[in-house]
Amino acid sequence: MSYKELFHVYVSANVAGVDGCLSSAGGGVPTVSGWRWMTLLMLMIICTMVPAQTFTPVKDAAALQKNILEASKKINTIQCDMAQEKSMAMLTEKAVSKGKFYFKKSDKVRLEYQQPAKNLIVMNGEKMMMQDDKKASKMDMHRSKMFQQLSSIIVGSINGTLFNGKDFTVSFAESKTLVEVTLKPINKIMRNYLSNIVMVMDKKDYTAVSIKMNEPSGDNTLISFSNKQLNVALGDELFVVK
Image 1: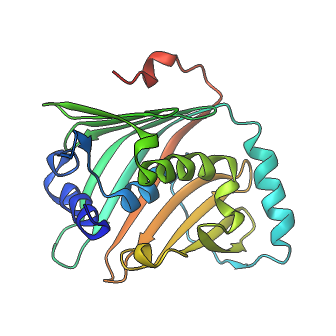
Image 2 (image 1 turned 120 degrees about the vertical axis):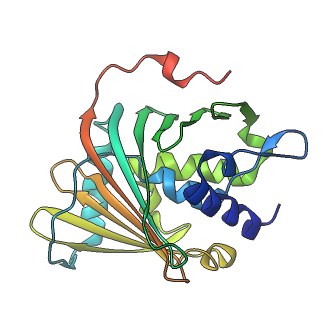
Image 3 (image 1 turned 30 degrees about the vertical axis):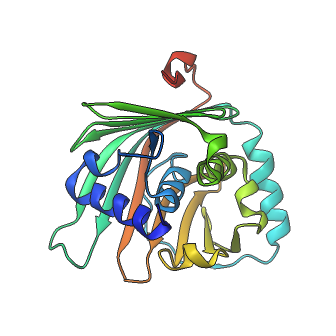
């Protein structure tokens, strides 16, 4: 399946619900808009709604990246609520979905959509599962470069290595209390469907407050986070791939 086809799978899921997200292709491997899920999942890091702020360019980006890396070393688990708003030219109203995100160091991720439809994604090492109320699909991520990149982006967004410039060109701006990170994709195929990602981070712990994904068409997806909990006990049963 092409990246363009994968992209439209995810867009359909935002509008019509979970059925557009889960399907199978060749050998039962689940297909999902890899780039959109990458950018969607990398946001599941935490926090609160973002107030209006004025940002100015960061003078010492290297020092800032060092601070982000140091802060990430203190994070063992993450639990938070999320709200996603998808704005599309073809829709008069925004498509809104809500759910929860869980992370456990070093590579365990659980993403639960609860409204308007239930959907579950679990990533544990090299294993991945996607499930709705009708079926579950699982795979070994090493079979797909796309899903390997997905895993590295999720973890990289939490431990700060996402900002090393390998997959995105990165620029930093700041206000008194927040950091704004703008990432522009280097991959030519990805640039066809994603103009940039704007992530806002809290200077208190350098965890993400929100993320906005902007598309060349003018459509965008805004994710906000609330009820952040860091380093709470999370059982391994949350991350079982079965």
